[in-house]
Length: 123
Figure 1: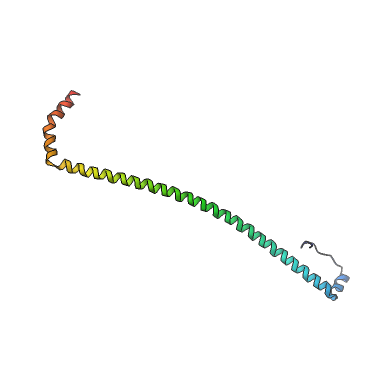
Figure 2 (figure 1 turned 180 degrees about the vertical axis):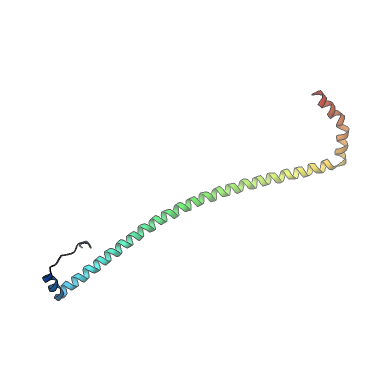
């Protein structure tokens, strides 16, 4: 197979003889088909190389997305844990507020007031 850019130079006399010889016309037609096929092969190769590169980029993007998903899931888990702790603290505060509002708590603070004052003075 001869490279597509290599052409046989012919003189004017040879070209007129080639025009009349059907084998030469067939050879010229076949050479043209070979050049067309070589060009199609080069286009196919370029397309394949581009597809390989695009696949690599998509794999990288997928790996990065998986990292982000993992980080996001860990962050959500941390937030859920914080919410659980905050709800627990809110329940404790509600119980404490209920206790402070009760009569026995108020009476106990009033009874213990002199003791608290003596403790402060002792410091």
